[in-house]
Image (cartoon, rainbow, N blue to C red; front, side, top):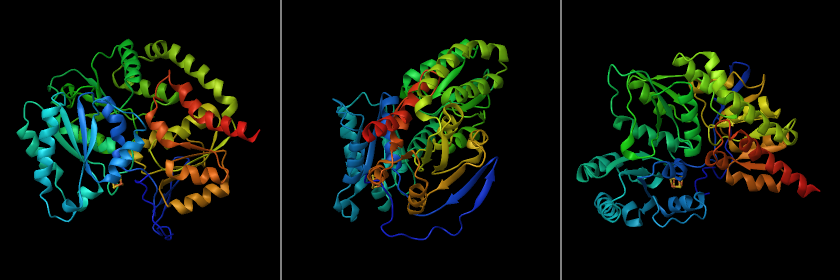
Length: 436
Ligand code: SF4
C-alpha cells in the first residue's frame, strides 16, 4: 500500500533501543524504518459504525487510492467517505485551500442532508502544507450549526499508524460528549468500535448481570453521544485507545483495567472486571456467562488440532498483537516466537502482558529490516503482518496472515471465538493443502 513507510536504504537500528522486563515477558523497544498502514485506514470500519457520519480526507491521490484499496471493491450508492484532493496548486501555496475546502464541504452538505457528523481527516499532504483543519472544523461547524457537527482529526502517516486513526477520531468526540449529572448513578461506557452484532451480544450480557446503564462509544448515531463524568466507568473494548482513555479520565471517568474480550478467557475476564466494578456477585457472573463460555470453548476446540504447537510471529500493526498472542497461546496452544506491536501502553496492556507465556519476546516499535531477518531466521509456521510484507514473505515460503483482517472481522466475545481461531487456522490449512 501507499501507506507503507519503510525507508529505501537500510539504516542501523536505533542504538537507544532498550530491554525491559514487564512481568514475565522481555520487552524490547525498537526504532527504525517501519512498514505499517497510516491512520486513514480506520475510516473503513468507523464509517460503518457511525451511520450518519461522513469522513472527508483532505489529502492526495495516494490517500484516495489507499482508501479505495483498503475498502476493497465495495461500491456504495451513497458512500460515507471521500477524499478532497489537494492539487499541485494547493501544495505550492498558489490557491487558498481553506476557501476550496469550505466550498467542497458546503456542496457536500447541500447534497447530503443525511450527514449529521462530518470528520475532516488530516493526511500527510495537509500537514505538510500546514492546513489547519481544527480551525476549519470550528469555522464550518459554526456555519452549519444545528444541522451538521464538523470535527477534525489526523490520520496522517506522519502521526498515526493504522488503528491510531480510530483513537484520534474517538478522542475528537470526547469534548462533544454531554456531562453526566453529578448525582448520576454509576454508568458503564464501553469504548472502541465493535461490530453491531458483537455490541448487541455484550449489551445483553451486561443487562443479564443487572447493569442497566451501559453506553457504547462510538455510538451508532452522531446525536447519541453518551454522557461522561465522575460516575462513568470506562471499559476499553480495543487496546489502541490510549488518547481517548486519557481524555475520558480527564473528564472524571475511571477506567476498569482488564484484558481485552478476545477468546473465552479474555471475554470472561473482561466481563468479570466490569461486573466487579459494579458490585455484581461472582455467582451471577458465572450463571450469565456459562452458556457463552461453553460455546466458545467448543468452537475453539474445533481449531486446536490445526493450531496447537504451531509457532507464530507477529509484525507490529494493529496493537492487538499481545491480546491475540495471549488467546493463541493460552487457549489454542500456539507458540508465540515474537510479538511486536507499534506501541505498548503499559497501563492498558499490563493485564495482557501478565497472561503471556514466560519469556516470550515482546517488541515495541519496529525496525522492519531487523525484524524481517529475525522472522526469516525463526521460520515460524505463521506470520501475521501487513499487506506490504505478506507477498515477499510468502515468496520466501512463509505462511502469512494479513493483520488488517483481524481488525475488520468481528472477533470479540464468546460467539466469535471460533471465527477468531479460524482466521489463524485457515492459512495453515491452505498452506498444508498446497504442499500436498
Ligand atoms: Fe500515504 Fe500519508 Fe495519505 Fe496515509 S495519509 S495514504 S501515509 S500520504
